[in-house]
Length: 320
Length: 307
Image 1 (spheres, rainbow over the protein chains, first blue to last red):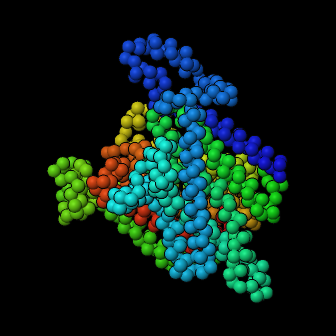
Image 2 (cartoon, chains in turn red, cyan; image 1 turned 180 degrees about the horizontal axis):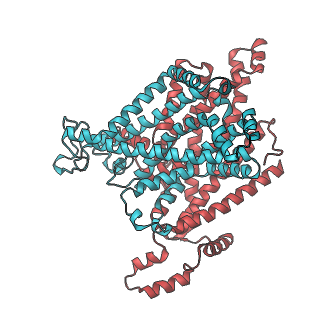
Image 3 (cartoon, helix red, strand yellow; image 1 turned 90 degrees about the horizontal axis):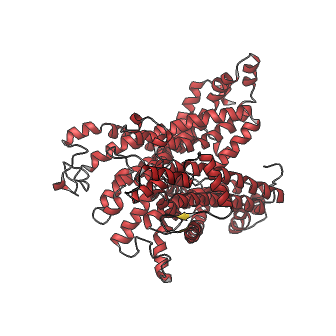
């Protein structure tokens, strides 16, 4: 088990290292470079000055050499300064990360308490009207563009009814609890409607499979009530595979968070990534993207470990 | 076994019979066909309505539905219905092309990995694991933002009107191949053990011939299902990138970039926000139901096999 965890952590580190190079390279391919930005800011600069600055900043060196220097500095904790926010990148990153974790945590909570019961209800009467209805809801959820859903919710709750704010900018500005709650309502709703689908669909198929098992027949044969059979015998086992969605859905959820945060001006990682890419804030974009990757990989790892912990039949031996 | 004993014609009839029972999928296929016909007859409808998709008329901004403008006009007084149809051409084309490209790429990789196995296979599966775990959208945004001049593309290509179209197709195909590759690889692992593969090999057939002539026809159904399902996803990705101004660039209209200004318009003209989104939703849900129906028809046991 320990060996498995160490293995996985090693793999995660390798992927992160590869991703850091890929992202570093991609960001180097974005329009303009730091010197171009300085030229734009200072009309008196000559091309000789620019070349000198390029040399000073090491921008005339080949990409792998620049990456190597960046990586060495990064390992020593020097991640650079954010151009857009005029702060060290980590000072910008932590609050955004916390905000995103709140958003994703609430989304997961609501998706579970709504999605799982829907899946169970559908599974108890497969191919009934209820089942088709739940299925339709799930297909609807995955087929709706998330940005459009966000806009629809704004039209309904902010424009028509006028009860919820269309922007979450108050977050982190000493606003009260209720202001925070109101600002979170629409972003959480947008993301939840999206992710209910995968929870209910997985739950349904797990539940249907489990209800066909022999031990369910045994439980019924010994006279257990249907309620007891479902809640005590079937549900527990059907819940185990649901843990894997945590991991699998994390990347999707994060992509959804980027859209939702940007539309609602919610100060999280998604908006940070979007703004820093759009604003040529190279240091910030690089670190934020790497952290997003790291987060999804940790999410995956935790889901895999949780799966094995809940289901002792799964062994990690020989499974690299 | 069925694939060996029955000839292909009855296989298709059987699949067709199963597909026909799936009324929702059948209905969705109808919706998609109508959508495609309408979109590609946009120039005709333009003639019929005596208007032009790019005709700006500031005296007729935000007009309501009328005979001349069935869905009204937008913030520049352009006809919303005709623009939706032109957007449909682009969104459907991007969806089909990118999904097809990803399918071809994924099939080749999946076949090679499944057929040869070993280190290449292990490396490939780790790679797909990693790609699936990545936060897709942020990376797509970076890819959509990079300057093509730094990639050394010719000026002629970069300045062509369709460059945003090609770019998005390439980006989506780069990430979209993993699902198909996994499915094909899994199926290839079982098919390569069959007797007819052994027979082909003993007759001296080359590895590419075995892969593409003997194994490929047996893995077509999961490819078809996965590709149909991915078209919906591609359309969603295209729309979100275009919404942020990073996908299809005006003057080409797509369902996504019709919504680029939507957030500012939300207070004045909510209807303008609703139409393009609704067409995206209808199209994507139709592709999803169609894929579901195809799965039931072509690949009845797939639910237990795929992970």
